[in-house]
Length: 402
Image 1 (cartoon, rainbow, N blue to C red):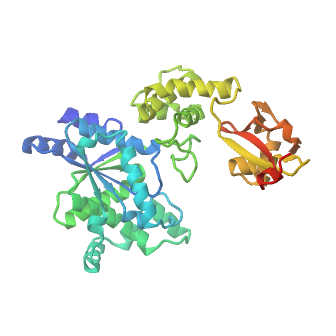
Image 2: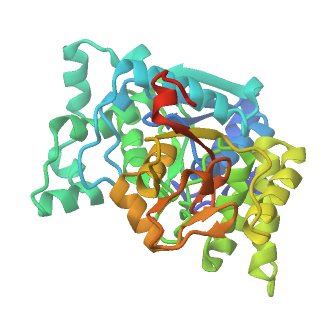
Image 3: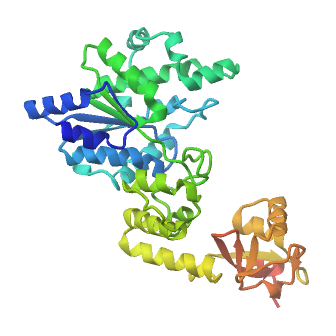
């Protein structure tokens, strides 16, 4: 049990209380029952990113030792919004959005977890409680204790709004542990306060207090802030093989060792060339989430576009109408093809971020003759492409194209 506990905690930040995990593992062995290892996820976005898989990989290790993962889909707590690390209240999602996101989360979690050893619960099962039960739950802590949380303390000091609903969130998460009888709860280091409060709630309801295990937070593609959709520095596990590969290669060199440790469980070899280390990492991640055959294809596509500056083999087409005798206004075309504003399109042209068939477009070339662009591949930035089909406005309107 000592070696099992050491293995499970080898890359964790904290395991509290000290020595308790080993005692729980020994008790589980003695009683011939698996530990119930809890993770709560609020489906506030349609998919999960690599940062979330750091905790999922730790859950998988518990599964490999024969224990049961209790995956709580926070369809009720998502209506509150986890305030962890937030400087403002989260936007409210509709029940339909939450349900759709919950289905996606579950499917994507199984890319890491063994679905045969997962118990999936929705906390609407127990959090849709009568008011008197909510009042009883709320009596188990104080406002002063809740305001000890770093994010709440910062917002309070800055006189930023904190809703009463947000103050309830840690209590609701703690009650999840009561409802499922959690032996262990996992989370990132930003969840430490919530996990510890869960122990208090379990004690108040007469249950043994859970062990808490916190994992490091994966830095995003900027190499600094935590991976988050809010910061647009994430790699989604359901993204295409090409996106996973290309985004991984954009990682700053200084973050490589952390990604190797948290995503592969390996140390980056001393003296490794960053370029080759990133390619190896990108291949491994693509193989994990898109299949082994996809890694070679993604690498070949990346080299075709970004090394040899060729166009992709398959490109979506976009139609653009111009008046007879008129020119193609590039900022308007960029807006139509890629969803940017016309002013953004002009800025990107000035920055040299626009290409035609792999060749840079001059920054002053705001208008081009239809024949100079029809059938060619328009490129914006590194990974956005569209083949342009220019149509005369009369043809689009149903008139005589002749």
